[in-house]
Image 1: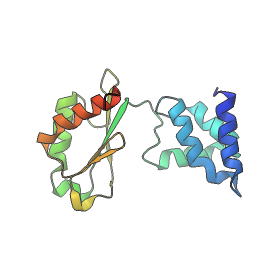
Image 2: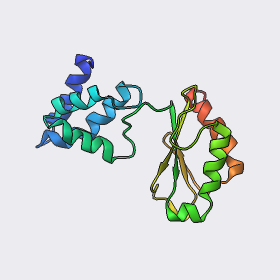
Image 3: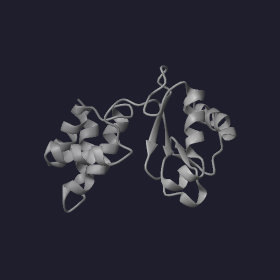
Amino acid sequence: MIPETLRKELSDHCAHYPSRQVGLIYVLQKLQEHYGGWLPDEAISQAAEIVGVPEVEVEGVATFYNWFFREPVGKTVIVCCDSVSCYLCGSEKIVEHLENRLGIRIGETTPDGRFTLLPVVCLGNCDRAPSIMVGDRLYERVTPAMIDEILANAEMLAEGKE
């Protein structure tokens, strides 16, 4: 269960719109934060109740968008663009380097729960390919040589040392 204060905040947010359904994305974002970065089934039920829509509709939204996670993810999510532009500019070398450096395959989370490595169809940064996002930071024209520094920066951010 979520705290009553959070439930009220989310309900009040939805009340500002002509249709409460407009607030669904916000509700899912806040619930994902509350549940440590992912949306368990309980969060889907709570969102449906708060917004006043069927659970199947909430599930559809939660599984449509890349930034909602229905399974636990690491503290820092790394997404690698696998669009044509990034692929032609060497994204497969970036993914291979990240897999080797982190000791996981794409779609997996490191055993310590620090990083999850995921593909994404497009980051909308085609003119600066290849691109990756680490947390909410976009990196462009990434090369394998840049990966160690990018990961070091991500670890510092995760520890709050920036």
